[in-house]
Length: 613
Image (tube, rainbow, N blue to C red; front, side, top):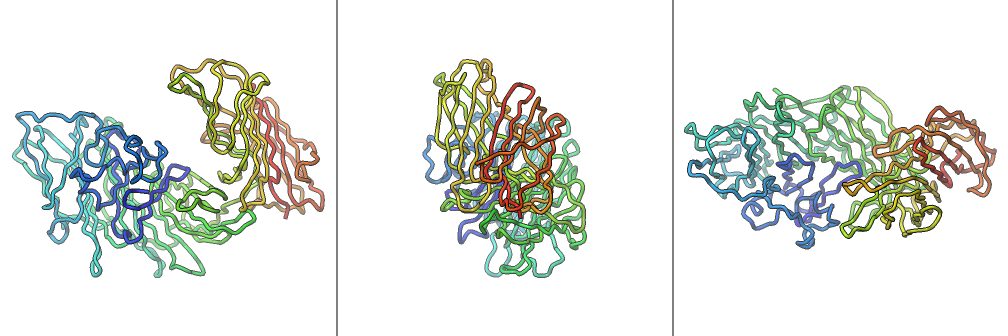
């Protein structure tokens, strides 16, 4: 939560959503990209920009990435010791860390901002960079809409954002621009006149669609040096219109625009729908930024949202950007949904646009958007074609997910092992993790226990420094109320480690055997026919297939009291088999083992992997 009460939620796939606090729905946000090109998420409400530039508000309390990295979820209450220790220039960290001095030949240069009425904007932000990327900085915009800096003679690029707030009778406006200037040729000021800007808007076919706002990103990436570029983003809320200043003459840069409006069906609609649009262009600003679409020009995805045995509330969050490279800041609009339900999702359907889908359902920790009992699903790299199609969210079956585990050396010279485990995970056309497991973790070396801890989905334990063969084991029980699947899980890996790398950090590729069944929905499979299963050894993040030397597969129809071996046909790390469940079986539990080509042994059991309908 930001000091203003606005809430920023970072999703498991790295994207994020912003929810204004009550009464702040029309403020909007500046989300500038750091001078050093890092992916840090900085989210500043427009009404806080002036206070930050004036030194009255701490910009470090709006660097979401750094705050979460320090374990802080309430930016206003975070102690000073937990804040970013870098110097800031306005809203952004100073990449040089130097205060700098003004040379005698420096000249005063002013930026003057005027909105579409000719008046001074309510809130403004501007930054600059030398055209060769050797220096960066920001302007402090005063009450007259003017910001001044002392510049050495040379070529510069100036990025601006400013807004006029909406009123009870008039819509607000958000104006964005990039402008090149030359200092030393008699040009001592730049007037950014919003009356020359073109509108950026979108219209959709359905007359009752409700526009709820849009993130928009724009930038200039050097063609000679891809490590240098200027980019900025903002979030326009529903009460404001967006305008873009004319395309600048910057031939040595690749210009980009990404505009991501969202429209929702009216509240309480019997046929809920969402328009998620990703509109823009690489290598130049679009000639026409007033977009209009019929439904037939979009992907119309009838989305079936299943539960796991208990009806829950949740949300979806869909992010679209260019396939070639991401230009946006990764902000998506959270859309409330019910599990189970059917929801029509409409998406920009172009070969150059890729979508990332996130869905959550279950019980949230009080006052947060963090699921503590439920499930989280992520899909990436989805490219749509125009037309009607279907998608299922929450499929199953469930087995162990590939863990993210690393060992490290701490500052005191000790060694640790830690990471993320997924006791209940589905990869059947999804990456869905169940949340709500309790249990214990243990680490053994050469058969002797060396460390153990409570908690399995996130864990850290002491680990000896010595090389050797270790066994990491987890015993988990699903303690939530939202699922009848993955009721219990056992996982173990035996692996070899050598000396700690010089950098003091090493990821451990610990494999699992995933389980796939075509046609699974909500964890259930048709039990009237033989069930064809696919097994795939996987490891890493993101998950990738791995080769194995051996693999076994067993099933139980009585929650693990008795087990039956299943004959499989294996080809490398992939195998297939057929189950013939007893007539009265209700759930199927699974047990897999494998040995990969590095000699790592894995064994895991999932009680109630899927149900038989």
